[in-house]
Amino acid sequence: MYLRILPHHQDTGGFFVAVLKKLAPWSSAEAVQRDETKTAEGENDIQASASPPKKKKRFYGYKEDPFIYFEKGEPVWKEQIQKFYGIKDSFDETLLLVRTREGKKRNVYLTTAAVKELVTDNEDKIKGAYVVGPFLHDRVISVCDQDAIQLLMGSDLDNPPQIHTLNPTTQEKLNQIETGSVALVYEADVEEEDKLSLYMVGWKGKASLKVYISKNDRVHFLRLIGADTSKFENDKIEDKFCGSKDDEDQGSVGNGDNQNDAD
Image (cartoon, rainbow, N blue to C red):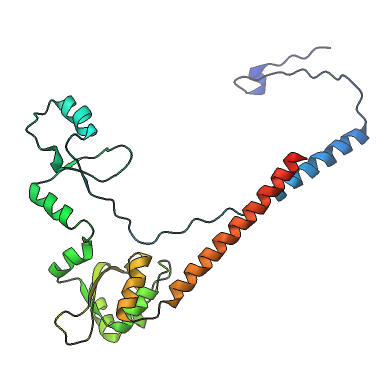
C-alpha cells in the first residue's frame, strides 16, 4: 500500500507527513475513562483560577514628574555627555535638568541660573494653576460655594457634573465660551485681606464641566471650604476592607495549593 501526495494538487506551499503506528489494541472503555480524567483535571484547573485578580486602583489627575538638577560629578555628565562631546570643564553641569530620579536619563534640559533658583526654591510649592491662573483673563470662571462643592464631589470623570445643574450665573459664563480647558476660581465670600482662594484646572464639555485634581487635593479643598468629606472617607475604608478581603482570599487559595502539592 502506498500514498502519493502532490503539493500542487493540494494547493499548498508545503506540508508534513506523519506516520502513526498502532502498538496495542485500544478499547472504547479505555477511551471513555481517559476522557473523564481529562475533564476532571480541566475542572480543577478552572476552579483553582476562578478567584478574580486584585483590581488596581485607578489614578485620577496628573502625576507630575520631578525636576532633578545634576550635581557636581554627576556620572551621566562626566562619563557620557562631557566625554562624548568633549565639553570643557568650564561648563556648569549643575544647570542641566532631568525629569526622572531612577532609570535612564534620556532627556536632559539646560536652564539658566535664574530658572534653577526659581525651581529649587519652590520645589514643593509650584502648582500650574496657581502660577498661570492670575495671568488668565478670557477663560476664567468664578464659582460659588455650591458649585465648587459639586465639582469637587464629582470624582467620577466618566460622569462629570452637568452644566445645567450649576448656579445660573456660572451657566451663563460657561455658555459664552467654547469647549476646552478653563480655569476655575473659588474665593471665600468673606471680607478679609487674606481670604481663601482656590485655583482649579477644568474642562468645559458640551454639557458638562469637570475638574482635574488629585483625590488628596480634592479632599483638602473640600475641607477648606467646609464641606462634608465623609464620602471619600467611606470610599477609603471600603477600599481598605476590600483589599484586605482579597488578600485573605488569595492567602486561602495559596494554602490550598500548598496542601495539594504536599499530597
